[in-house]
Image 1 (cartoon, rainbow, N blue to C red):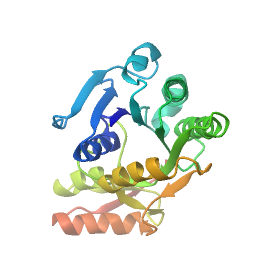
Image 2 (cartoon, helix red, strand yellow):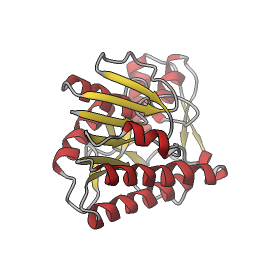
Image 3 (cartoon, rainbow, N blue to C red):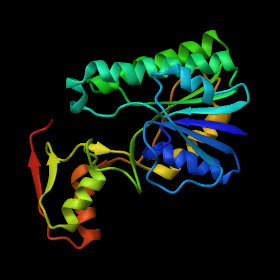
Length: 248
Protein backbone atom coordinates (compact mmCIF):
# COMPACT_ATOMS: atom_id res chain seq x y z
CA UNK A 1 0.00 0.00 0.00
CA UNK A 2 1.16 3.54 -0.73
CA UNK A 3 1.29 5.78 2.36
CA UNK A 4 2.12 9.50 2.46
CA UNK A 5 3.40 11.10 5.68
CA UNK A 6 3.49 14.89 5.64
CA UNK A 7 5.96 16.12 8.22
CA UNK A 8 7.50 12.65 8.14
CA UNK A 9 10.98 13.99 8.89
CA UNK A 10 9.85 15.15 12.32
CA UNK A 11 9.85 13.47 15.70
CA UNK A 12 6.55 11.55 15.71
CA UNK A 13 6.29 11.51 11.92
CA UNK A 14 9.60 9.69 11.70
CA UNK A 15 8.39 6.90 13.97
CA UNK A 16 5.20 6.53 11.94
CA UNK A 17 7.32 6.29 8.77
CA UNK A 18 9.46 3.55 10.32
CA UNK A 19 6.44 1.57 11.52
CA UNK A 20 4.79 1.73 8.09
CA UNK A 21 8.04 0.65 6.42
CA UNK A 22 8.30 -2.32 8.81
CA UNK A 23 4.85 -3.39 7.61
CA UNK A 24 6.19 -3.45 4.05
CA UNK A 25 4.35 -0.42 2.68
CA UNK A 26 5.59 2.05 0.09
CA UNK A 27 6.08 5.26 2.08
CA UNK A 28 6.59 8.83 0.87
CA UNK A 29 7.80 11.54 3.26
CA UNK A 30 6.60 15.00 2.24
CA UNK A 31 8.51 17.58 4.29
CA UNK A 32 10.61 20.72 4.10
CA UNK A 33 13.84 18.99 5.16
CA UNK A 34 15.29 15.51 4.88
CA UNK A 35 15.01 13.35 8.00
CA UNK A 36 18.02 12.96 10.27
CA UNK A 37 17.45 9.21 10.60
CA UNK A 38 18.42 6.61 7.98
CA UNK A 39 15.57 5.99 5.59
CA UNK A 40 14.43 2.40 5.02
CA UNK A 41 14.72 1.25 1.39
CA UNK A 42 10.96 1.44 0.86
CA UNK A 43 10.79 5.12 1.86
CA UNK A 44 11.03 8.04 -0.59
CA UNK A 45 11.61 11.66 0.39
CA UNK A 46 9.93 14.53 -1.47
CA UNK A 47 10.80 18.08 -0.44
CA UNK A 48 7.84 20.43 -0.08
CA UNK A 49 5.29 21.81 2.34
CA UNK A 50 1.54 21.70 2.59
CA UNK A 51 1.09 25.38 1.73
CA UNK A 52 1.82 24.48 -1.92
CA UNK A 53 -0.92 22.06 -3.02
CA UNK A 54 0.44 21.80 -6.58
CA UNK A 55 3.35 19.59 -5.46
CA UNK A 56 1.30 17.81 -2.79
CA UNK A 57 -1.21 16.97 -5.52
CA UNK A 58 1.52 15.03 -7.31
CA UNK A 59 2.49 13.11 -4.17
CA UNK A 60 -1.01 12.17 -2.98
CA UNK A 61 -2.45 10.24 -5.92
CA UNK A 62 -5.51 8.10 -6.60
CA UNK A 63 -3.60 4.98 -5.53
CA UNK A 64 -2.66 6.41 -2.11
CA UNK A 65 -4.13 4.23 0.61
CA UNK A 66 -3.31 6.26 3.73
CA UNK A 67 -2.22 9.82 4.50
CA UNK A 68 -0.72 10.77 7.86
CA UNK A 69 -0.75 14.57 8.17
CA UNK A 70 1.98 15.41 10.68
CA UNK A 71 3.00 18.69 9.02
CA UNK A 72 2.80 21.92 11.02
CA UNK A 73 4.71 24.26 13.29
CA UNK A 74 5.14 23.68 17.02
CA UNK A 75 5.44 26.01 19.96
CA UNK A 76 3.60 27.44 22.94
CA UNK A 77 4.83 30.88 23.98
CA UNK A 78 7.12 30.88 20.92
CA UNK A 79 4.24 31.02 18.42
CA UNK A 80 2.42 33.89 20.13
CA UNK A 81 4.71 36.22 18.19
CA UNK A 82 4.35 34.30 14.93
CA UNK A 83 0.58 33.92 14.66
CA UNK A 84 0.16 34.29 10.90
CA UNK A 85 2.75 31.61 10.15
CA UNK A 86 1.08 29.23 12.63
CA UNK A 87 -2.33 29.79 11.04
CA UNK A 88 -0.86 29.21 7.58
CA UNK A 89 0.85 25.92 8.37
CA UNK A 90 -1.43 24.47 11.06
CA UNK A 91 -4.79 25.43 9.54
CA UNK A 92 -4.44 26.25 5.85
CA UNK A 93 -1.91 23.46 5.32
CA UNK A 94 -4.19 20.94 7.05
CA UNK A 95 -7.15 22.01 4.91
CA UNK A 96 -5.04 21.64 1.76
CA UNK A 97 -4.27 18.05 2.76
CA UNK A 98 -7.95 17.34 3.48
CA UNK A 99 -9.04 18.82 0.15
CA UNK A 100 -6.54 16.79 -1.86
CA UNK A 101 -7.40 13.59 0.01
CA UNK A 102 -11.09 14.22 -0.69
CA UNK A 103 -10.45 14.86 -4.38
CA UNK A 104 -8.20 11.81 -4.77
CA UNK A 105 -10.48 9.47 -2.82
CA UNK A 106 -7.87 8.54 -0.19
CA UNK A 107 -9.30 5.72 1.93
CA UNK A 108 -7.85 6.61 5.34
CA UNK A 109 -6.42 9.80 6.87
CA UNK A 110 -4.75 10.49 10.19
CA UNK A 111 -4.82 13.93 11.82
CA UNK A 112 -3.14 14.72 15.15
CA UNK A 113 -4.33 17.44 17.49
CA UNK A 114 -3.52 18.53 21.03
CA UNK A 115 -5.32 19.09 24.35
CA UNK A 116 -6.75 22.61 24.24
CA UNK A 117 -6.66 23.80 27.84
CA UNK A 118 -4.08 26.48 27.07
CA UNK A 119 -5.14 29.69 25.32
CA UNK A 120 -2.17 30.05 23.00
CA UNK A 121 -1.54 30.17 19.27
CA UNK A 122 -0.63 26.49 18.92
CA UNK A 123 -3.73 25.22 20.73
CA UNK A 124 -6.03 27.58 18.81
CA UNK A 125 -4.67 26.56 15.40
CA UNK A 126 -4.67 22.83 16.22
CA UNK A 127 -8.25 23.05 17.49
CA UNK A 128 -9.34 24.82 14.30
CA UNK A 129 -7.72 22.13 12.12
CA UNK A 130 -9.28 19.41 14.29
CA UNK A 131 -12.73 20.92 13.70
CA UNK A 132 -12.11 21.02 9.95
CA UNK A 133 -11.14 17.34 10.05
CA UNK A 134 -14.38 16.49 11.87
CA UNK A 135 -16.35 18.54 9.34
CA UNK A 136 -14.74 16.74 6.38
CA UNK A 137 -15.34 13.38 8.05
CA UNK A 138 -19.03 14.14 8.53
CA UNK A 139 -19.89 16.00 5.33
CA UNK A 140 -17.68 14.26 2.79
CA UNK A 141 -17.96 10.72 4.14
CA UNK A 142 -14.21 10.44 4.78
CA UNK A 143 -12.31 8.12 7.12
CA UNK A 144 -10.32 10.51 9.34
CA UNK A 145 -8.86 9.36 12.66
CA UNK A 146 -8.14 12.25 15.03
CA UNK A 147 -5.96 11.71 18.10
CA UNK A 148 -4.78 13.98 20.89
CA UNK A 149 -1.61 12.61 22.40
CA UNK A 150 -0.17 13.91 25.61
CA UNK A 151 3.52 14.42 26.50
CA UNK A 152 5.54 12.56 23.87
CA UNK A 153 9.16 11.58 24.51
CA UNK A 154 11.78 9.35 22.96
CA UNK A 155 14.87 9.18 20.75
CA UNK A 156 15.47 11.99 18.24
CA UNK A 157 13.35 14.50 20.18
CA UNK A 158 14.90 17.92 19.68
CA UNK A 159 15.85 20.12 22.61
CA UNK A 160 15.39 23.39 20.69
CA UNK A 161 13.83 25.58 19.34
CA UNK A 162 10.82 24.25 21.27
CA UNK A 163 11.61 23.49 24.89
CA UNK A 164 10.84 19.82 25.68
CA UNK A 165 10.98 18.63 29.25
CA UNK A 166 12.75 15.25 29.06
CA UNK A 167 15.63 16.09 26.69
CA UNK A 168 16.16 19.39 28.53
CA UNK A 169 16.22 17.75 31.97
CA UNK A 170 18.58 15.04 30.70
CA UNK A 171 21.01 17.56 29.18
CA UNK A 172 20.99 19.56 32.40
CA UNK A 173 21.46 16.43 34.52
CA UNK A 174 24.34 14.89 32.56
CA UNK A 175 26.16 18.23 32.78
CA UNK A 176 25.37 18.66 36.49
CA UNK A 177 23.53 21.90 35.75
CA UNK A 178 20.51 23.10 37.72
CA UNK A 179 17.31 21.46 36.49
CA UNK A 180 14.85 24.24 35.70
CA UNK A 181 11.24 23.58 36.66
CA UNK A 182 8.51 26.10 35.90
CA UNK A 183 6.14 26.77 38.79
CA UNK A 184 6.13 24.63 41.93
CA UNK A 185 6.66 21.40 39.97
CA UNK A 186 3.54 19.78 41.38
CA UNK A 187 1.79 19.98 38.01
CA UNK A 188 1.51 16.60 36.31
CA UNK A 189 2.41 15.25 32.89
CA UNK A 190 1.27 12.09 31.12
CA UNK A 191 4.35 10.79 29.31
CA UNK A 192 3.92 8.49 26.33
CA UNK A 193 6.75 6.94 24.30
CA UNK A 194 6.99 8.09 20.67
CA UNK A 195 7.08 4.57 19.22
CA UNK A 196 3.88 3.71 21.11
CA UNK A 197 2.21 6.83 19.69
CA UNK A 198 3.19 5.77 16.17
CA UNK A 199 1.73 2.29 16.59
CA UNK A 200 -1.48 3.65 18.09
CA UNK A 201 -1.79 6.25 15.31
CA UNK A 202 -1.55 3.58 12.61
CA UNK A 203 -4.03 1.30 14.38
CA UNK A 204 -6.47 4.19 14.90
CA UNK A 205 -6.20 5.23 11.24
CA UNK A 206 -7.45 1.79 10.24
CA UNK A 207 -10.12 1.37 12.92
CA UNK A 208 -11.34 4.76 14.18
CA UNK A 209 -11.85 6.90 11.09
CA UNK A 210 -15.64 6.99 11.39
CA UNK A 211 -16.09 7.64 15.09
CA UNK A 212 -16.97 11.30 14.66
CA UNK A 213 -15.01 12.30 17.73
CA UNK A 214 -11.48 12.95 18.93
CA UNK A 215 -9.67 10.36 21.07
CA UNK A 216 -7.07 11.05 23.75
CA UNK A 217 -3.82 9.04 23.77
CA UNK A 218 -1.89 8.70 27.00
CA UNK A 219 -0.82 6.23 29.65
CA UNK A 220 -3.36 7.41 32.21
CA UNK A 221 -0.50 7.65 34.71
CA UNK A 222 0.08 11.20 36.02
CA UNK A 223 3.66 12.10 36.90
CA UNK A 224 4.59 15.24 38.82
CA UNK A 225 7.31 17.34 37.20
CA UNK A 226 9.32 17.35 40.44
CA UNK A 227 9.24 13.54 40.51
CA UNK A 228 10.33 13.42 36.87
CA UNK A 229 13.28 15.72 37.58
CA UNK A 230 14.33 13.63 40.59
CA UNK A 231 14.11 10.40 38.56
CA UNK A 232 16.27 11.82 35.78
CA UNK A 233 18.86 13.02 38.33
CA UNK A 234 18.89 9.51 39.80
CA UNK A 235 19.20 7.74 36.44
CA UNK A 236 21.98 10.05 35.29
CA UNK A 237 23.90 9.84 38.57
CA UNK A 238 23.81 13.62 38.52
CA UNK A 239 24.70 16.25 41.10
CA UNK A 240 22.12 18.65 39.68
CA UNK A 241 19.78 20.54 41.96
CA UNK A 242 16.19 21.43 41.11
CA UNK A 243 15.43 25.13 40.85
CA UNK A 244 11.97 26.65 40.37
CA UNK A 245 11.24 29.41 37.88
CA UNK A 246 8.05 31.49 37.47
CA UNK A 247 5.39 29.71 35.43
CA UNK A 248 5.45 30.72 31.76
